[in-house]
Every structure is written in structure tokens, then in C-alpha cells.
Length: 493
Ligand SMILES: [Zn+2]
Image (cartoon, rainbow, N blue to C red):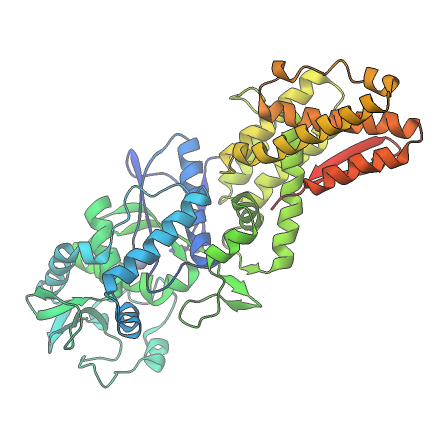
């Protein structure tokens, strides 16, 4: 079975067959009047997973994600902050890209900005006027919706239904309440560009059509974005693009579900949101990634601390397992490949793909056969990387130093107390100079300390054993004693 994607255009799962050698992807990105929140990151993460999986299947990908850097809301902010719109936009773009990098979200090939593509936008608007699909009124240009018979088909809305919600604002002079803005005349003091219709700026919808067609051609493979964009934004994108070119615009439309906060959609305009910067201060990027990938991208995702804590402990299972195994060989044929592939090919079902990872970890934790255990660990690592989790080498350095210090203190005390029998039990792993690989030695030292504890407990020196447990827990390493022996887990941010 090849890749199947749920296409909003047809409302069903379809075989994904790209139209050319390079899969073109366009993602509706941020309107940069404010800092990015968790909802924006989810849309970017969907693009990231899509790109990773398409590349894995051997496709070449060209991805775009736009920034709406000029619109009414940004102009409002300009007035509010008494700061140039360019500075406001630039600041929010930088915050967003930094967060994406921290989250290991694959960068798009191009991040086009509306303000940098005015020429393409004007020429597309002109094309629509020339074909009779658009008209100018007092410096504004509108798209004549009723001229496009398929309008409403994409979002499954009838003209009657649309009429009920449509109205003409006092500032507008359009012919029909259904018509939408392609170009907006500038009011005094507002930023503007010169156009055949006077000083003005682009409407929101037209920029996405102009920029996507400029970089990806008049027909391209995949368009993604949040489900709230289906209407009117994507309905309008289709209408204006098809009207201008007479060609199919996009073959696959992928929409991700909302991110909700206390059950309500996160939204910049209502102020009901969690800025991604705050979230990244509290949770590691891997935990946030896991939190998002646990839910299928088309479903709504509730952002709540409780859910993030669940993701944190779920991530700790993976992390503890990988730490224990240190460096594993790179492989090209992981275990359970078919199950994993089937899950991802089924409309990028990341929650099922993650289940494969956990199944392998469970088996790995119980596995007594060394060769098999290595193969399992290598497979876990393979899928971990494929799903975009970051190897946390740097993060290991500090805890590594901490456990080395603990071991050194423990050994000093053992020598001072002349605990030869306990000391003997650890002489086999004594020479740290020989073990230079931090990732390998780190779990080794912890296991060594646990062995010392076991010896001490055998000798009923619980005070000393507790001392080791305390020291480890101060470094975020928690020891669990059971009848089978001691295990540990690391605290994950
Ligand atoms: Zn868009």
C-alpha cells in the first residue's frame, strides 16, 4: 500500500501520486501581528512530518510557508505600539523561526512574505480583472463570487447559506455582499504600494495564490493549513486561482485540527492562546513533539498541562530506554518496518507509528538475547529519528558530570570506610579514561552506582544506600527498588 492522504477536496482518503518529480507543498503560515502560539506550531509540525515522510518514501519535496506580514491587524498593531509594521513583523517572524528550529521542524525551502511579492499579486489581480472575475471600486478591487460557478463547493456551502452571513461594511463599495477583497485602497497614514488602482495593499487571500503559483507553478500537489482556513481563505484561494488560470489549482488539501485551550480554539485575535515561547520554557521540544504526534493531525488537540505531563512521562520511557542503550549502530532495515510504514501511509497516522516504537521498547526491556536487544534498540533509534525527535547529546553532558561526581564521592567514602568487598565488586568498571563516549558511559555509571547500592543493601547499610539514592534524585535520576533489583528513570523536562 502506498501513501494515502485525506483530501479535503473530495472528503476521502486518496492514493497520493505526485504530478511531477518534485512534490510542491504550500502551507498557510503565520499572520505576524503577534507571537506564535501552539496552534501555529501544530500546522508547521504537520508540514514537517509530511515532508519527512515524503522524503523517506523517496520523493523530492519543495515546500513553501508564507508569512502574511501586511494586513489590517498588523496595521492596528503599528498604531498601538507606535512601531513600524516591518519591525513588528520581523520580530514575530524571528520568534517563530527560532521556535521551529528548537522544535526540529524542517525548514520550508522558501518563506515568502506578502510584502515582497507585490508585483506577482498585482499581476494576478489584473489577470482576474481582464477575465471579468474582478472589478475595481474606489481603489478597492473585489472578486466577483457569482461569476465563479463552483464557489462554495470546496467548503460545502451553498450560495444561499453564504448570503445569510454576508454583508457590506460601510467602508466597502462592493457590488455583492459575497464578493471578497483582492486589493485594498490605503487610508491616509497606512502603508501602501502603487498599483494600477492607486495606492493600496493586497488582500489576504490573493497573496497565497500569487506566491504559491509563483514558486510551485499553476497546479501543484499539496496545500496544507489549519481547518479554520477551509472557509473563506481556501475557498477563495481556489476561486481566484482557477478563475485566473483555468487549471486545477491544488491536487491535495490537507487540514489539521484546531488546538484548543480549555475546550476553545486557540486564537491570536481573541487572546485565548499559549505562546510557544512560554511552552518551550516549560517542556523540552521532544516532549512537545510527542504531545502533538500522539494525536492524529486531523483531530482537535487540547493543550493542557495534564496532557503535556502525560507526554513527558511517555517521552521518559523512550529516553530512559535510549540512554540505557547508548550508541546503537545505524541500520536501514528496522524491525516492524511494515507496521510502521502502514501507519504512516495511512494519512500520516503518527499515533499508530508511535505505538510501534513503544511495542519495540517493551520487547527490548524484556529481551535477554544480546543480539536481538541491539537490533531492537537500533530500530527504536531509527523510528525516533524518522519522526523528528532530537538526539539530546548536550543535555546529557551536565547530568553526566553530576553522576561522575556522585560516583567519585561514593568511591571516596567506600575507601575511607575500608569497604573492600563493595569496592571489589566494582573494580571491573574502573577506568573512565577508557570510556570516552558520554552517551555510553552515562547509563553505565548509573548502573554501577545501583550495583554499589545493591551491595550496600545486602550488607544492610541502608543509610549509605539511601545516600546514593538521594544524590541521584538530586540530579533528576530516580531509583525504583523492586524484588527484581533496582531500575532508574530520568526526569525529563
Ligand atoms: Zn493562505
